[in-house]
Length: 255
Length: 206
Image 1: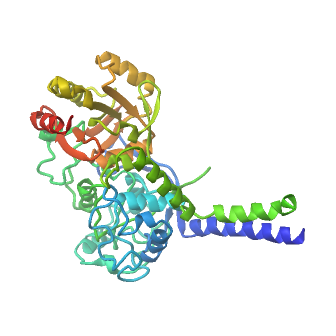
Image 2: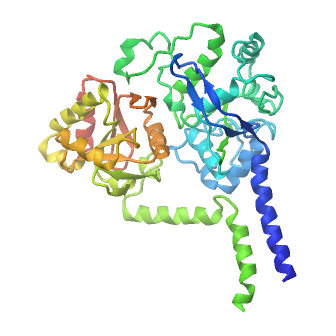
Image 3: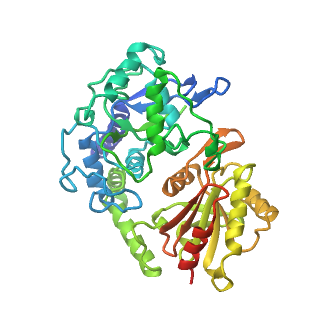
């Protein structure tokens, strides 16, 4: 009987450790309402509270995923889910290039989505990501603060930040790193962005391409940073990957 | 003997069950794929029949996408409450169907996938089909989960966003798939000359 109790205790603590280890490096983002780039003043967007990975997924973590899920190895992945640029810097199926704790990049949306599902999580929505990323070190909405915008714009001018390790950008209000300063990140519904990526074309003449789409008119410099992200999302397709594009996962909070 | 060790067996099983997508699941997937491959022709890496999603038709039938395999597909993503573009997309689909020669008509399936699965229940889809005089078998209306719909749209490069409780913004794309589920042609926009789309279908159809 004693052995049984020990074994049971081991199982429960393993389960507990596994669950909390997954939640360990996640931070709670309190919900709220905000006006995103594409919104109008009378159409604020509501974000429910959620848990977000403190860091983007790393090379080492993705390697573990690929070993456990061989269908996502570079040589096995099917072209519906990833194009030829998938893991193109990896020497082979099980050897990444660069630092173990640099963010994983060159993965498609399908791969990122599957990784998160495997952790019992999911990709963040655009709204969730933007909401968490509005924060600087001190406040949840820093979009009107010059230093916040300057940081992002300087990052845009810095080449090859994707080789850097996670955790070197600032720790934001929620305790989350690297939403700016490291890599772009996949979102669950990146294909909600209906702009063609070239602002001259996104006038009403485009109404034949997109039914009912709102025009994104970014006039302020402080919106420029956000506009770049939306434009990038609008230009991506689910099977594409980019060496500047990684991801992190989020989890719903069971209330 | 088994009963006595049952507790240990149960513990062992739960230890194994804690891993995600382990080798057991992979070999199950592989054997499932093998069965599929022997049932129908081998599907290529680019086939939409690689998607595991489940859908419900306007008749309330639950189907897997790969049940459509074997016919040329003309597919569009719409929603029934759409006032502006969707009626024109529906008209485009009808127009395309009209121009397929009689001896090839049976090889083509026209599929409407809803981007608003919450509103577009099977009953609603059935009513919509009736309103549009599309009750024949060649017209198929599908709805799935929000997640499967988002994933399917990502495959088709169809962008869509709910912009109000009743309104969606969405790309206007008609896609043509061959009998193996590979995307062969896309027509983007409204009032586009559908000559190329029709040509693509005719070339594929048997």
